[in-house]
Image 1 (spheres, rainbow, N blue to C red):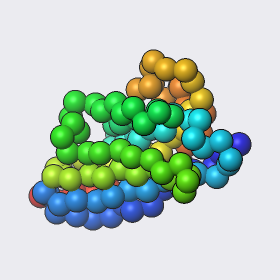
Image 2 (spheres, rainbow, N blue to C red):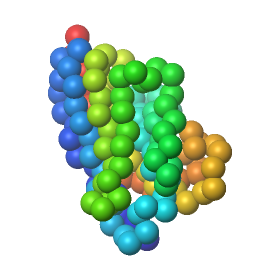
Image 3 (cartoon, one colour):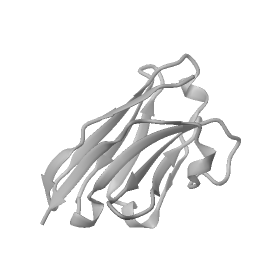
Image 4 (cartoon, rainbow, N blue to C red):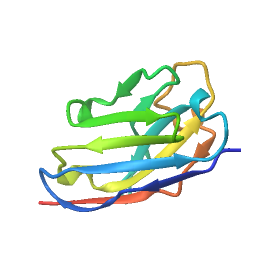
Length: 124
């Protein structure tokens, strides 16, 4: 079992930055793919970025160059640094953990555990 707790969301003006954190329980955190997804009102949950156990990172096009994912296995924590935020980034951001060998990292069904979400609101 893995429990995930996100933090760091809030209200920020366009062009600003936020850093989200996701703290995980469990002793095998380092083995998991970790992903960030987001969901805006009335829309489906969508993939944002993922990081594998080796530190390899995978970004969706609309955040490349603006968002950075990182993980600290000693602290069982994954981070999402978000810069140059836009109003379109407004959503609830979810952290997810999954044990899989690779591929389909953008698919919600690959992830076994989810956090409760943290709200990010970007004002224009």
